[in-house]
Amino acid sequence: MIKPILQYPDPILLTPSKPLEKTDSIDTINVLLTDLYDTANSIECVGLAAPQIGINLQVFYIKKGFLRKNSDIFIINPIIINESREHSIIQEGCQSLDEVYIKERPTNINVKYYTDFYDIRASFKPFNITLTGFPARVFLHEFDHLQGVLINGQ
Image (spheres, rainbow, N blue to C red):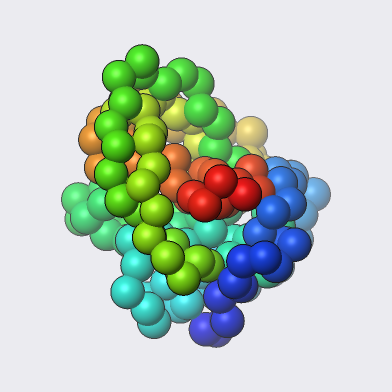
């Protein structure tokens, strides 16, 4: 279902999200994933984080072609393992903000995450990948939402 996107200064956007747990309801998580997918695909965006639709869980969605060449991806319980010392500075926009901001971010990151709630329940190992350039920036932008951080410095 398409959900409204929360706008700053909604307190949900500024609250760190909780990780998904093995005990979380599969039905609840499936509804969240569907809502993220439907909402993101109803607007012009690269990705969308659960807090932006009012759910403070560590989940975000990235459209096909930005992290994976041929498929969309859900990122669940992500962890930044390390970041490069090299940074880039470019403009970023956000569906929860009215303005575009200049944002400095690492150009390379190593991350760990799940892509499926079943992976967590079955105690599968998470994915561990290195991202460079724009994919790293997209991942970090959505990851920030899970930390309660926006590109306007809030």
